[in-house]
Image 1 (spheres, rainbow, N blue to C red):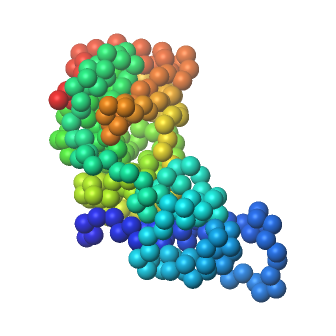
Image 2: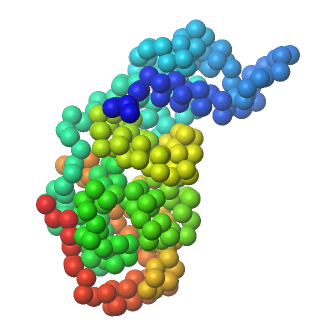
Image 3: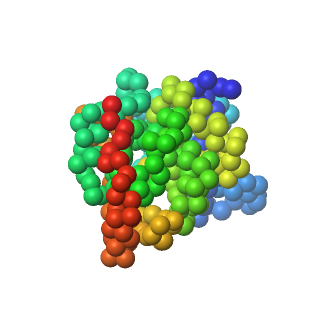
Length: 287
């Protein structure tokens, strides 16, 4: 298995997929007599839009070891009309953005773990960039899973959603939740090519879950900082929560996730959940 991200080959594949998804009519390009054999723009059209040679695009898409400058990366992002998250991914792949030299967090920073506890009665947890769950309060354990019953190697939100029999059935719109998680992991994978644990997690999920493998190959990139999830809970039924993801300036590799009830019925469900499981631990994951 490859020990780190092969950024050259990933860059080649990413550029090809983004070129092929573009509609020539959106660019006002002149029609050609010869029918297009593949979807999207031709390489020469991307080259013209980016102000580089066609041969340069060919070599990039063939993974021939080029490292574009920051100016060329910016030009490619504009030519391919990349979304902000995709643009950041491209910069990370080409190593044109400073990286955090610190090792990824594997334990919760004590002040953040304390904050997770203080956020009660809102369900809250702390994760790192690869979705490892580092700290959680009692409300989050009651809502999702008693993470304290799991070995640390299984306290990963993506792993649980794919592999844990109970957690697999939690989300009503499971496909959307997993797809969004994959899009986040791909962005994290490019930003942390040295993180072998993340590489191993992706390899395991790809090997063991066919849906993950198929969606991973689509190369969607998205860092989702807020949204809504609808859940099925065995004790209180279906409820909806809005989530917010915050990144502390002092510990940018850690992410604070906070859930709030999306409506009155969901708030009532959370209130019932606290009542029926009031004997649960208040907070876990303190370092």
